[in-house]
Amino acid sequence: MDHLDKHALLLAGGGARAAYQVGCLQHIARTIPDWRPQILTGISAGAINAVHLGSYHGSWRDSVEALRNLWLGLDTDLVYRASIGALLGKVLSAALPILTAGKLGRDRMRGMVDTEPLQRYLQRNLHVDGDRIVGIAENIRIGALESLALVTTDYNSGRSTVWIESDGEPLLGRGQLDTRFTQLTLSHVLASSALPLFFPAVPINNHWHGDGGIRLTAPLSPALHLGATRILAVSPRKRPTQTPRPDAAEISPYPAPAQIAGIMLNAIFLDNLDYDALQMTRVNKLIHATGEGISNGMRPVEVMVLRPSQDLGVLAKENEFRMPKAFRFFERGFAGEHMKSADALSMVNFEPEYLGALIHMGERDAAARHDEIEAFLRGGACSIPVW
Image (cartoon, rainbow, N blue to C red; front, side, top):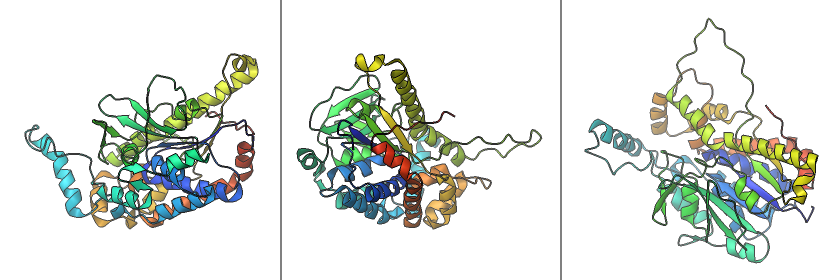
């Protein structure tokens, strides 16, 4: 590895889709054992992965294997309460203020599900002392890690907040990012991974914080401003493909609420990474073409994005029958019978068979791009196609 390079690993959001990242990392850790990123950035459910890797005491390969076991030990009941009573109560809580013009139920609705099971599961499986995540400071002290950054959305201010535990205080640019150097806690992890409306927000410093992907239009920026010169990002979304034009004589069925929700969630969590990586590649080409950027303090930052070879929404639809009956009962009311993909469902399906399939797909996809990945991690460039 080029010791002048500072490598960062960006783990993007997407709820249960973050299990895909584990498979990619497992292949890399097994086949390129001397690679370990100095900077970790976690956004949304990627915060769980980043914190686990950043706090684990041991080799990088062992930390990835332990992360795999964490995901395979999950099921939906260990993430949120999915009984008919719990879900019906949440639905009624959401409807009551609307039906009574806000006179009843105004303070009762905090997310569509109760995520106390996830909090307890992470307390058992992460290195937690009280709320503090221990292990990060020790890994920074021994040089196994330089910086770990988690991103949340401050619902009070509407801005993205980057929480950083680091051995120094690099200067981050302003703009959309509100930067805080801190000792990371389980509250930061739960806040970053709190899917909007579905999972409840988490109070931090007297403000309510939710999913880190909501307002983060430049997902690469935290790693970039922490000094990264080479960023490996794992996106849990298949590259968009050109869809054939429908017959003008045919009118497709009206989109179901679940279909619209899936598009909105993709726009929040996944589209911005594609755009940010594309912009970074364009800037790199400009710097290399002119040669002026480097002399003026600018530097090229190489980016590689790993992504699924298949639509995870289709995989989620195929595994829908594995989810708890109560959840499937309510989900049928939002989904349409013509839906072949279920993007929203792919983010909240935490059944072990589905998570295992995501991990297997990630490992297989990384193996298919092994030569390209190894060349990039050892100093090569990665071109990102324009579409």
